[in-house]
Image 1 (tube, rainbow over the protein chains, first blue to last red):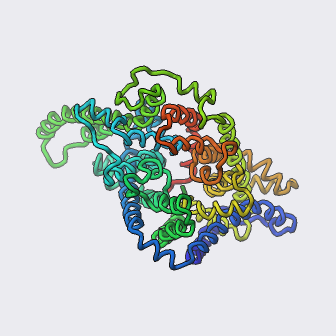
Image 2 (cartoon, rainbow over the protein chains, first blue to last red):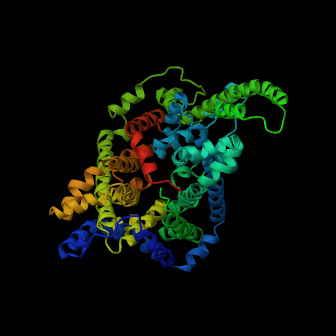
Length: 305
Length: 312
């Protein structure tokens, strides 16, 4: 965590010199300092007890280099790492790109698009456990809904989704996109609505419509939001547990685990908590640069989600 | 959009070409535009139908499984042959051994959700008041701490958190879940509150100060009432987060009396012969509060996203 502290320092000037008027002078009085301390104590206590302590504890649990030797010698770990990479790379990028396009669609003011937006956001409000279990049931046997639909349309039997590792992994990714794309669409929608009208009008007069407007006007204006959302989503997806745990539950034969579920199973099913922690710590070389980049971007641009 | 463009094109005086050829171009173009508009409209409807099917298919699946009677599950029908509400009766009357304490667990979920909401609002608003309004000297450290917590995936902290809750003597207590989830909800609260707080004039605090109010009175009488929209947005967020969360609930709560609905629901997956219709009925009842809450406070939650200042 010393690395992140370095980046934290870089945020100082941006955080203090704001658009606000100069600090209150009354802060200098003794009793007010006492109030200020009393006000931040709850947050500092929670942060110390439930963030700093677990992080330290986790690093201590995964301190033994032998753990990593054990980890890397497990062929399933390699599969898991590749799965995680695919899950993050495909899931995040497809989700962001579609969310960006769909936010343009939902910009329409007609009544039916507005009510469609309400429906479209349901996956986001639904508990992950519920949604993903339902998707699991759609896939798991040849009598699930998807196979029934397949049979109704083509007459033949549908594929067994959770028997092929590729299809199962694809199902995980699609489910993840299903659950989280609405949230990012909403973020982009808010960002698009914040674009001043006259910019679009000017573009209109200059003849930039449709595709040209999207590429040359809207996207450059949203590039920053897009980048920060992508970074944030990458970090969250890297640690996603619920999707894979319920949709494919590792089937077939644990070939579709990701790091979060792999570590979970090592720790709580096989009783090697240190190995589980080590599996998650092995993501740090990817996670830390992403976090630093994100924190810097957020500080520099002032975009917050 | 195309209407404006049409008008602009028509209003534009012919510059290089003769007026005759412009006439010809216009005559050829106008129906073209109309055709394109209808095409766009049709395309929009097709996209709309696809989005609706895409969003609702898993929900439809839940509904048909919950309406199945036990023998009919996976008969491969797209709509159950004998739809019945029997599963819902079983859930509501706790008539199955996985569901023996269902309403108690439902209460637990509410208890956890409301506690997380209350704690998040209290801790978050106090912290952001001190950072944003009282301007304490090292406030930037607090907001960076919040940012750091926000970007750490919760699942990566699960194993050490499990151990730590045992050390704190909170294992199998609802408070372990409440505290863990409050930790993960507070950073978002601090962001939204500090963003929103900027819109409240500092002069209010200063004049209250001159009138002799102490920081607590300024916080409670001025800051909190003016922050009401942000409080609603963050409160909804925290409640949804706590209600929908699974991993920490599962790890930290293990006995039927301490379980929340999420944990009880996932128990069905332990055995292959579980009645899935009961499970899906439970799932639908469990999903109703967040859906209702979400539709009730949608305006505020969307405002929360905009409040977050996506102003890149």
